[in-house]
Each structure stands twice: as structure tokens, then as C-alpha cells.
Length: 427
Image (cartoon, rainbow, N blue to C red; front, side):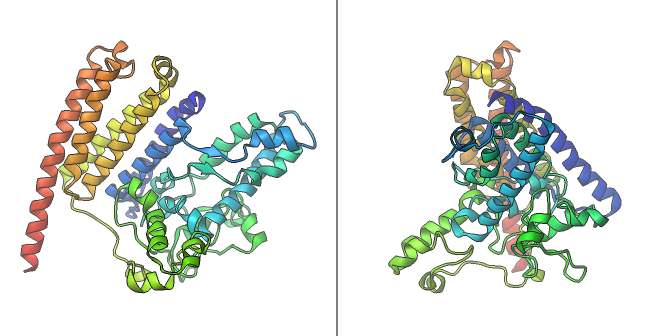
């Protein structure tokens, strides 16, 4: 937990700088693929994901360590060859986990957030799930376990393998010659994120594209079919927490609504998107039929609003940077504190994105956040030990929370005025 947090303290600024560089490069080139609110939504999703991971809020049914200790045929030392084996094992496992997430209703909920952006850029790579609490597919690493690849080798290789999937989420790099036959390139992954019928459920590879070619799921990007990004049932929100559970809520609702007893159970294991016939007829959902007529989700935002959302994002990054850098200190005070801190981060993301969505409830969530923040200041007699670095820090945090609540209420009033103006102009 502590070690992973320190890794993220290095990775997060690097990813943010690359996201901003892509924005600048696209603007300079006249091909800007990054919308501001979409980017903030993506970065907020990344914040929730890394917070959940650092707090260890998931459990593997079968751990890799258990498989090695019980099933290993050989026991090998950690050499460069061992790391190479670990890389191939992780990539093979990643292909199948990824494919299952796309092909079955229940598992699609764990992955839908990653495809929810209607853009394709480096920021959307950070849209990662918080809805996975039980890891079911560790057994795909069985080949590595049988060979006796040490757990520490997997533990080191896995984050590197994950981070290496960041770079190809871009429209700024065209096809890459002979590399198209070996590794996953931006072109391959553009296909994967597209919802065009020609591209759906293709290119599941994470680093190597050869798995798709072996198992028949490869599709090259076609010049005649420009990719259209997003999901066929649009998320229609900037809120990453809502997106993480939208599909699950639909499955639960459909399972309750259907009169067919068999369908109540089958719906979870049917192909992604399947719904009981009686439910489809009575409770239709909005679905993109013609991808070329897609109207991208957007909300009203002035220059002031955009600036405020960035201030909020920057404050969130400061909050989680302190958490990741001081896990041992916070844990030493009370082992429950890191989870209370994590809850503050999640409430913050929800409140900020609710405001971006123009929801009238935004000031109430902001008030809840401020109240909870003040409670944490009282509970920890400062801010989780930060007062030792400066007595003024708890006062600064309390002041920020008050200002944030006032600004949120002000923005909602401006949003209401704009909505009324839009209605009057149409009449």
C-alpha cells in the first residue's frame, strides 16, 4: 500500500503533464482532441481509481501467492528471463480479462467507465474502474504460477505493464509501420474504443496485438470508417462514480422488472447489452443507432466555471498527494483514518462532477463535503498530521471548503439562469 502510493506520487504528475502536453500539441497543430470538461472528468476518474487501489479495496478469490505456493512445478530465481516470462503471462492474462469484460453483461460494468468518454485522448486512459471489489480472474496467471515466477516479480511487473498502456490512447499518432504487426498502437486502440459496428469488440490486446491475431479479434483501422468514440448507451454525465455503477443498476432493475424467472438469472451471464424481451418493450433505453449522428454530451460552462473546475481538480490532487505520501504517518495515528480520508476524496469527486453536470443537487453535495471535511479536522485535531508541517494547514482547508460551498451555489444559480435563457430563446 505505502510503496504503491509512492510510485503514484511519481506517476501522477508525469501522466498529468503528458495529458496537458497533448492538449497543447493538438491546439498548436489545429487538431485539438481534448475537451476541458471531459478531461477533468477523466482525471477525476483516475483519482478515484488510484485512491481505491492504494486503500486496497478489492479482494482476489485466488491470490497469485497462493497459486505459486500450492501449484508451482518449478521454483526459479528473479532474473531478466523471469521478468520476461512475467510480462508475457500478464499480457496473456490481460487479453482474456479484457475480453471477458467486453463480452458478458456482469463484467462489462467493471470496464464501462474506460469507454465512457466520447473523445479519445491520453486523459481517457485514466478512466479506470472503482466497481471491482472481487478479482475473479487471477487464475489466468496460472502459467506463471506453474513455472514458479516469484510473487515479487509479478508485483513489480504489473504496475509497469499497466502504465505502459497509457501512451497509445491518442489520435495524434498515426499508423506506425511494422510495429502495427507486433504491439498495440494508437491505431489499434482507436478501433477498440470506437462504437462503429465494424469496430465493436475488437483489439483486446494490452501491449501485444498478437493475441488478437491468434484468437480472431483483430481489426485494423479503416480509412473509410472514421472511429466514433463512446458507448452505445451514452453515459450522459461527467460523474465517474455514477458511470461506474450505471450498467450494474440497469442489470439490477431489469432483473427485478422482468416477469421471466429464467431471465432474472440469465441476464448476468448473457452477452453485453442483452436485456429481457418484456423489459425492452416496456422500459426502452436510449441507444445510439447511427454513430455518425452522435451528439456528444456537453454542459454549460463559462471561462470562470472552467477555471473553478481546474482549481477543484488541483486541490484534489494536493489532497491525494498528501495521502499517498503519508500513509504510514496516517496509519500510525489510526488505521481507520486512511479510509475516512478516502471517503473524503470520493465525496469531493462526486460534488465537483455533479456541479459540472448542472445538477441542482450540487450545492447540497458540496455542503456535505464541507461538513465532512470540518468533521475530519475536528476528529484528527488538524488534518491527518499535516498540522505538523504548518499550523495554518487545517485553517486553510476549512476556509477552502467554505469558499467552495459558496462558489458551488453561485455557479448553480448561473446555470439556472442560462437554462432559463435557453428556453426563452427557443420560444
